[in-house]
Structures are given as structure tokens and as C-alpha cells.
Length: 165
Image 1 (cartoon, rainbow, N blue to C red):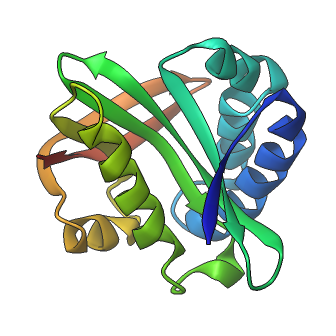
Image 2: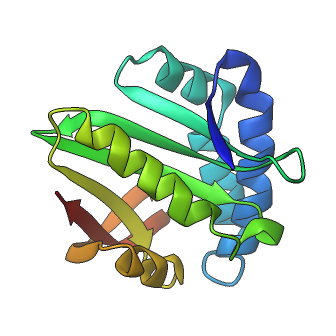
């Protein structure tokens, strides 16, 4: 596996990987209408492009050398809060889960953060998403809960998690 820094030309691939992973990860947790709403808002070409233009925001594509295929992506922002990087997104397509890609991607992120002045990583995870267990297995801990109004009558009901160096 390797992580490849994404560029503007990768936006359609990020959008495709997001849709494929979200349909699997969130089906049965949130409505299809909310999935479509959030994908349209969070993964529009304009939104991803603005992230890519931010020098503190980084997208990396998760590439499987063995199958010569892209299996997911992650996006994180250094300096999100004082001495804190926010892992905004890490998603794998359903068929690649359980193969160690998520763990390797988090280890890559931890290494990247250790090169910066940041001392912790934060993330949000839906309270019903099994990914919480994965993050806990990688040393993350819940430090709060939040219900965020994201518009159009939809909310995100999340745990806030952190990894402290």
C-alpha cells in the first residue's frame, strides 16, 4: 500500500470513492437522503478544490500496490486548533476493509503529525458507526459528544475522539 497526495485532477476519483464507501458505511445509520445531501455538500468539486488550495489541508489517496487500485482516501488539516490536526475524512471502499489499509493510513498520519508542531489528532465519528471501535484499537479515545445541525433538517450525532502524542 502507498499513500499518494491528491491533486485537482483526482477530484472525480475522490468523489467516486466517497460515494462507494458512504453507501456502505452509512446505509442503515442515516437516511439515503442525508447521505446524498452530505455527499453533495462535502464532496462537491468546489468544496474539495478549496481544501486542496489550503496549504494546511491534505488529501491522500490510498493505493493498493498488489491490485493496482485505489481503495480509499483521507483528508486532514494541520493546525485546525492549537497544536491539533483534524482528521476530517478517512474512507475505504467496502471490499478493502479489514486488509490493514486503515491502520496503515492512520500510522502514516501519525508520522506526518510527528513532523509538525501538532500534538494531537481529533476526529468525529457517528455514534452508530463501527469505525469507533477501529479508532479505539488505534489509541483514540472519546473526549466528548456533539449533535451538529448540518442544514436541511439533518444532523450529525457524533463522538469526538482524540489521539494525543
